[in-house]
Length: 110
Length: 118
Image (cartoon, rainbow over all chains, first blue to last red; front, top):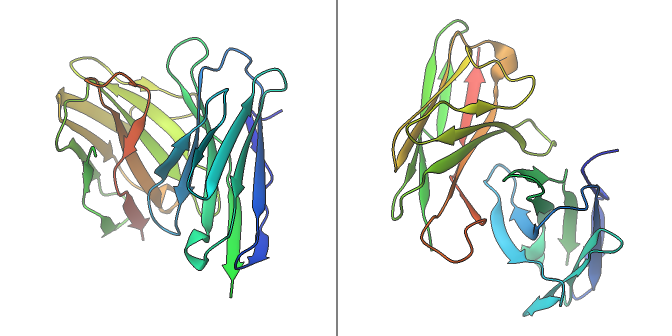
């Protein structure tokens, strides 16, 4: 089983749609969780951290369920510029080590 | 926000040559930097952890004699791909941990270096 698993997609959605990405992780001792965005041929950029209480930043909402070892990202009112690969990132668990999911590709179309 | 730079941004070289990639933290000191590699349509794979003033820690399957890492200062880590071969062609990305913030486990990524070995 992979340490961090994501649905690879691609997700093809129209502008204005709401889309949700899921991610599961295997190490219950993991401490920090993030969603990164990566555009084609570019480096990953931090989108948002994920907290147990859930957090929201504009159109983006992230949730963490430690009991189920599950992380989600919800994007509302999708824009064309949201088209990218979204990486689930899990950190910690016995020393600093960051594990990246393989990413979920999103295409938002007009 | 924190800025991490990489140089060069892209390089094309002949098989058998060595290529050095620099990673710099521009506005903060980083005792720990990471080197990743990403093949097309695949996730980032951690190659090694670069520690200032000490030897790098390599992930399983990464040849330390082929991928030489030097972290001589708090703002610079270098990755040298020795005797590069076409299978080493990839996107190499470094990242750095900022030490002077409360949340110290956020990584800041460099823009990446695209290596093509002919």
